[in-house]
Amino acid sequence: MMKTLVLEDMPNLFWQKVNENNWLGHFTKDNSIAEIVIIRTKTQFNKKLFIKYPNLKVIIRAGTGMDNIDMKEAKRRDITVLNTPEANALSAYEHTISFILALIKQHQKWKSNILSNNWKSGISKNWEISDLKILVIGVGRVGTRVAKTMQILGAEVLGVDPYLTNREWKEKKIEKITYQNGLKWCNLLTFHCPLNNETTDYFDLGTLDKLENPIWLINTARGKIINEKLLPKGLQDKMILGFGTDVFKEEPWKVKNYAKFKNVLVTPHVGAFTKKAKKRMTFEVLKVLRHFAFNGKGDF
Ligand code: MLT
Image 1: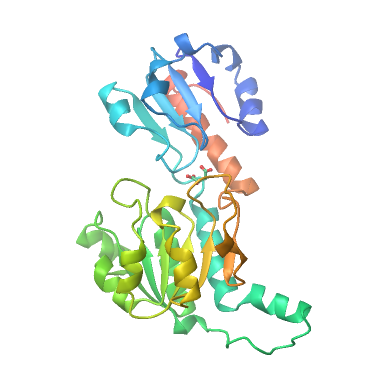
Image 2 (image 1 turned 60 degrees about the vertical axis):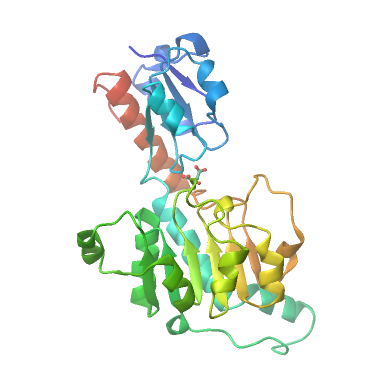
């Protein structure tokens, strides 16, 4: 049996199921014999860390983003890396929709307007969903759900995803556009792509200049996709009508001044912080473990 080491907190339900299946004896705290490690979002699996696990064969990333794992090094060492891609997709998509609606209906601005006894004055009009031209960057599990929902609600939607085939676009019933042309067309930009070399600073000061309309900006993917430096300028110049973000360059985030704009919504990387997402994540990890470590045996 392959020995498994758990490097980050797993939900109680996970340990309950491990116990019920009598798997506990196959878990270890000893780096030198661990063949499977389970990580979540905090562990940076860089070159140095690989050295600490000489027998490693499988990394299970409980969650979606793999940007905290040096994939090249894993490949070089012939280590299999698996994630739980479905677990958080639904909650991350819902988080995105909540940002879109709260921004265009200006909840935060109206609240402060009431609190300062300025009933209904001094704030521009709310938008309707049919005013939106949404550019979805990354049309995968989360992006597709965002696109389809917003289409149904009456927004115009286009997608950017260089990894989809024409057939996949057709099946999804979403129109594609290039990033450059999409920037000229949209008035709402939402990111649902992984963080990698290609997408780091994907939206930076240069990109901001290419916009033809002011935009609502949403990020529930990874903080480094948007270069934070553009935010004060974009918000000040009103090219960014509002910004909703769940993710930051560094986490926990050292609060920057731009967060104080009333049209900026910030949440502390809680897109996957629902009971059901944790449950789905637990069962996806258990399935992977059953396959790799327990010869397909186990009941849950
Ligand atoms: C993910 O990548 O699944 C999300 O960012 C949530 C997380 O792993 O914490």
